[in-house]
Image 1: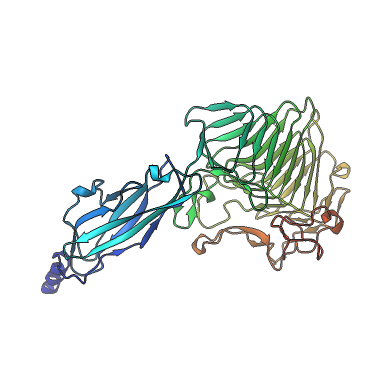
Image 2 (image 1 turned 45 degrees about the vertical axis):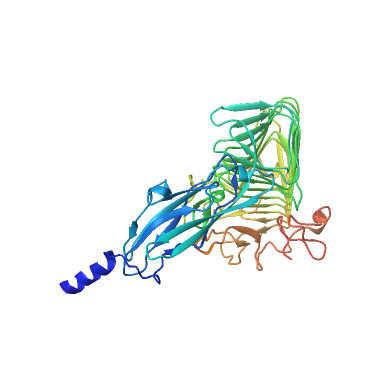
Length: 472
């Protein structure tokens, strides 16, 4: 036995000159997500394995171009000093790679950059790993740690993406053109003090999200973790008009917070085709704001997905789904609060009354009760609920009819996927399942002004489904 161990030991630590022996790599191509110029990237890891019994010696490592990427091999950042690096049989080493700023990456559209990492062995063989990334210039607003940046009327265009670093206060008209993309740094937010016009389209939506484009780990992008930036706040003491079409607001603390003091009249919000998803506090907050919300998904918030207090609010063909952190993997910094997906506050004695209505919509989640109407006397509440799928007790209000209510005995899935299956790379999908109880329950008259769903699918050929997605 001792002799066998000695022979194995010799095979592991004695370097071989056999040119048929090769190294193995964790990937043939190391690919980065899109990175912004002047910002660099997170560090990615490449594993180098010697799966042979004998040791191999790397006598040289070099990167062919060396302008766009920096490489650290086994803790050595200067590749020219890396010589005669031995990898014993069955052993491995780490290689760390980053994208760094380069003049080659100056472009408005995303461009592909690449380089080749070479490993030359003393047995005479050379092996390569391709490194690639997509890089893009961005317009930057604010500075990290500055606090607040005040700007007058501003227009975000689709020419190139924007990176926002702190609190951006827009004192005049705020416009966002179709296809514009805002990447928010940790803690960044927008405070709009006047009117807002955000006019995305089905083919060119407006995207507002965090600026981390890399992954927490293999199957979990940073985009899946809520709270990576602060939120969008529409605040004014005067009545303002807010128009938002096809705007995706993703993974902040707060999605959209509309506040008016109510002393001088209420602000007005119209939303169509929007998606407010994965926030560590609230999704949509309406305080002293009249609102019309159509064909919109508001989903996965740790607190209320929708909070209404003061004003007249009408939700038509909208999907409110509360499945925040409903997964076996803990990626969120906060836990789901024990609160409903929708909270309607009509208890104020001094402020404007609250009248919130839902038509052909879905309100559900993994907790038992997902709708709370807080009002002094239910039988006098003026809000209307028609053609909805609701996970709540039957509403004891005079204008609730033709709704389908969740039952404990229900077995059919409402959505394609309400659980994040990270090992299978399957994210939440709030389109309707083939056996969804929300199929065909909508009021046809209500649906007439909204013949297309959020995806552009027609509702004209059959009775409309509840929610923002019509099942084809």
